[in-house]
Length: 303
Image (tube, rainbow, N blue to C red; front, side, top):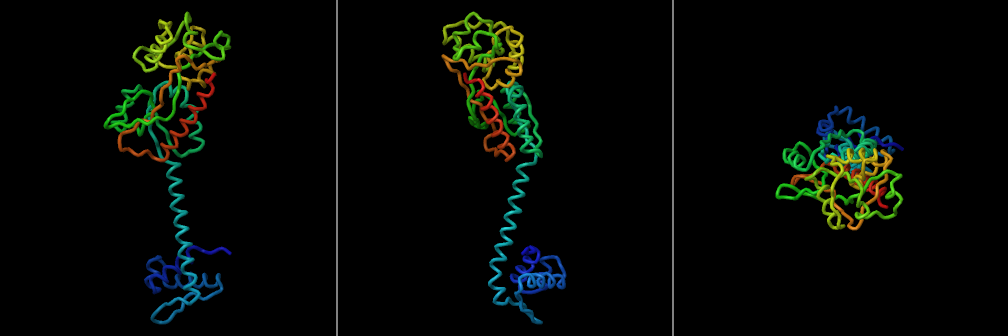
């Protein structure tokens, strides 16, 4: 048996308002139209629900028994509609974010592909920028959030850790280090090293790790981003020190990525937002996909 929600709604409104004229006005139908809806519901249920007189309308005993169930049915229908509107809102709209060129060039393409598959109605705008610019764009509300390393929280800025990455070395598959199960910083001694430019967070961490391993860092080349460093390593110009999240880009260049140990240099990927800001459901979903893709990328550089 299929009950018509319009007929159920007509019965509930008539019971609540106690008269055909008021119920018809509430439902935006004529009194004759309301009578037809009630009669069809009674025919469907094979019972009389309403007693009509010239001056009043009252429910039959069966009508009184059916009314609470009819009201629950309408409430459930409204809950379904509200839920569906929330789901549609979650899967549509636009998000804007800022992130470093390293993440944009290595992890982001896979993230965008997966996110588009799950949220085809959400438009994504991204800005590649260093931390200073990223913070400025968040303050200016040019982006909803940022994903970055080494940003300092403040009275206006919230930085939440998403997950960790480690510094790793990228080399050709024919290089001696590609066959080692564990690669240590001291294993880089005497090798031409490709690093990030002076002043970057990755460069500072690399210099500190070299010192801790008792080595002096004298880069053969300095790159402004990981993609350039990986491209140079793919040409056999040296060993590139990059993030473990660079695995997809390294593999596309026929490189092997090994996490560097002794010391193991970790850093946190941060979700950066304005204090008090509440991320939209699509933005939260995007961050979750990003974290998943980055975790998968890092797993390829574990050895």
